[in-house]
Length: 81
Image 1 (cartoon, rainbow, N blue to C red):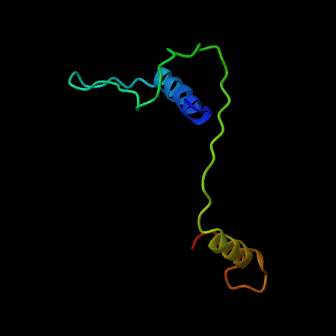
Image 2 (image 1 turned 180 degrees about the vertical axis):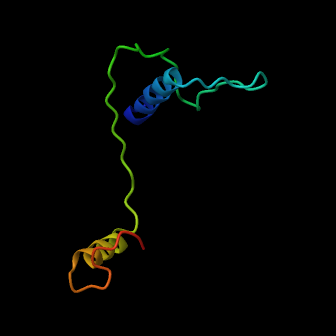
């Protein structure tokens, strides 16, 4: 089990402890393959989580920021597309 799986497992346990979700009687809570349940996290323990997201459309974002930031642009100050 790698660090990513461990963190995701801890996150899942934390969320499960904070949610009032109860599966239907015909459903079971199942861990993904390779995950291990370590039980519930201590409710007094503070968890620090970090999420990494793959950036997409970075060029388009840069263009939009430039357009709404340039006083010479017709989109200057615009809030939506």
